[in-house]
Structure formats: structure tokens, C-alpha cells
Length: 253
Figure 1 (cartoon, rainbow, N blue to C red):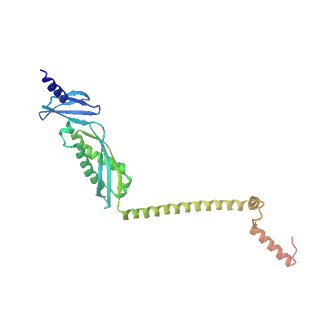
Figure 2 (tube, helix red, strand yellow):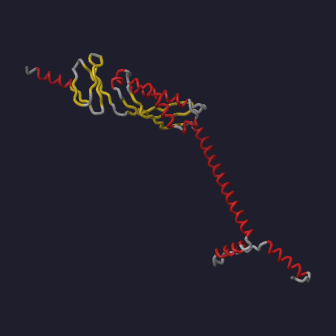
Figure 3 (cartoon, rainbow, N blue to C red):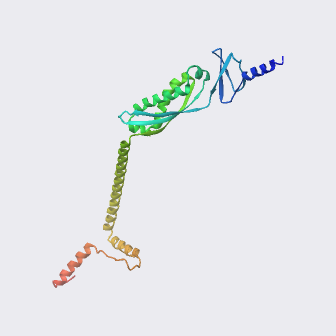
């Protein structure tokens, strides 16, 4: 009987399956699905049963860089990452040979299809939209595999060097355009303010003199400043008339 003890120990050792909290076990008995093992201590029948352990956590799978042509015939290289998890361990093991590889290949095909239906400008501006469209495409197939796609992110969009240079020149021209428009708007506002100030001074006889005094006062006592006082044209005209009368010996009244 003692010789049976090692045999029993080996059988118990082979029958024990410890499933982690984030795992699920799928048991096949003589090649047919038998049951699903939950987290904790589980037992199977050695030689008759086989257990496949499935990770139920969110998994990440890279989408390798893909060469694609946009709707407006611009060649791009684009890559990303897909986040998914197994929600039905039985389907993930039975319905597809390798769900990691299957998701990767399906994501690559969907990425090329989505990029081919978008313009280059939309591709640069709508990365989230691209991810959402790819997610919808993959999810339709992934459901039959017992998977759930949680998110797809576009990581990098690469374009040919000559196209990068063209985009750089376009961006520079756009910045110069905005700077010119801003300067023109500033000049317009300054002209309007100067016109309003000139109108106010024309309507107020003492406004010009007051402004002149304020300017002189702001110069300070520094000797390096040269002050030029402008005399209004109407005063110069009056002085000219007065000088003419004096030179012509006309009485000045």
C-alpha cells in the first residue's frame, strides 16, 4: 500500500489548478468543452481533462505601422494600439485559434480601410474619430470571439519629407497672413482713435494748447530734449494779415 502513496500524491498534484482572481479556466474533457473554472482552488481529472487558462484583464496589442493612401491620394504611415479584454473565455478559446493575433490582424485591416476613406487634413485633425471608427469595425467581429474592444488610440502619423516641407511652408504663410491682418486691424483702430482725437481738438479751441502744454510738461527738465512748438495755422494766417496791414501802413483795428 505504501507504493500507492507517491502515485496518489502525483495524481493530486496533477489535478490541482489554482486560478488567479484575474483569470478564468476553460476545461476540456476528452477534447470536448466541459466547464469553466472560477478563481480559487480547482481540480481536474488528470489525463482525461485539460484546462486552458485565460487572462480576463484589459490587454494591449500594438497595431504595427501601416502604409496607407488617404482619400486625396496622400501616402502616410500610421500606427496605433488597441485595448481589449476577454469577456467570454469559452468563446475566446473555441471560436478563434489565437485571439491576440486575430485582433492585431483585424485592426491593421480596419486601420487601412478607415484611413483610405478620409482626407489628409481630416486624418491629422480627427485622430479620435479614426480610433472610434476602427473600434466599431473590430467590435462587430470581436463579439463572436468573446472579446470586448475598449479603446483604440492612434499613436503616430508619418508623411514623406517633401510633404512635411510643404506643410511647414503653408503653416509659415498662414502665420504671416494672421500677423498682417492683426497689424492692419491695429492700424485701423489707431487711425480711428487719431481721427476722433483730431475732431475733439478741432471742436474745442483750447484743446490743442492744453495738449501742447501737457506734452511740454511730460518732457521734464532734461537738456537733451529739443522742443518744437507747432503754432496753429489760423494763428499764422492772422499774424500774416496783421503784418501785411502794418507794412502797408494801414490802420490796425
